[in-house]
Structure formats: C-alpha cells, structure tokens
Image 1 (cartoon, rainbow, N blue to C red):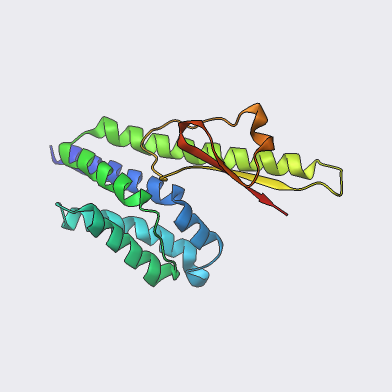
Image 2 (image 1 turned 45 degrees about the vertical axis):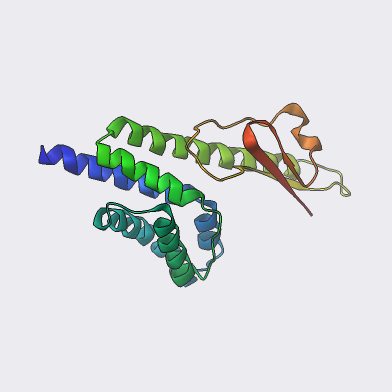
Length: 184
C-alpha cells in the first residue's frame, strides 16, 4: 500500500511540474533571465517547493496558494504575477491527489502537456510562415493562444480558423480563447 501512495505522490509531482512548465508567467521569467543566471534551476526547484508546500498544508485556501506562488515569483524572479490561473489548477490537482484519483491527475498532466505542445507548434508554424514572406513591407505577426483565465482544466485546444490571420491586435474567439498578435 505504501508503494501506491508513493506512486500517487510522484504523479502529483509530475502534474505540478507540468503545470509550472506550461505557466506563461514562469516561462517568460525563465526565458528572459528574471531570476538571474540560474533562472532555469530556480524554475526546477520551484516544482519541488510547490509540491512540498501542498503536502505540509493540506487544507489550503485558494488565496493562500496565490500568495505563496506570488511570493516565490517575487523573491526568485523579481516578477509580480496576478493572473490567478495556476493556483486554481494546482489546488484541483491536490484535491485529486487527496482523493487518490490517479486517473484525474494523469489526465490533467496529459492535457497540460498537450496544450503546451500545441501552443508551441502554433507559434513555430506562424514563425515559419513569417520567414517565408518575401514582401519587405509586410507586417510580421506572431500568434499566441491562451484562455481568458489561463486555466488548463478544460482540456480542449481550439485550432485557429482560416480567417484567424485577419484578426487585429487582440480578439476573443469562440471557446473563450484570445488570439493576440504582435506586429513589428
């Protein structure tokens, strides 16, 4: 029985790390070195710190999780985060862990990973299309898809439609997704 509990705890850790790796605020902080030369190491350490925080505080309120993550991001990455998306997701994962719902934890981690891959693939495809454009006067655009609240609990990654290239600046499309374009 102890082996099953350890496996469930390890699965919770995997889900937490997947959520942190897909969290745009942390990605931006790491990619831009907001945590100094050891930003990547700090991001990896953050997974263990968040996991341990949940284990030591079984009855956390959402605002406590938000405060903890906010404090870590401020102290380690000099970054203020106010989107509130990740705390809810982490709390949901922890509830699945507490109930011993291995299937739900696996599904959440899988959905987060799938969505992260799709967003990267969309960005790469758009970047390639921009590179292939021969017109020197064209406007380069980068497409980034994200949900309004940032939560990854729905598990559906909408595909951009054929008319998504005509969207200007920022527009909310069906399923609550926002397409944001950066113009150079």
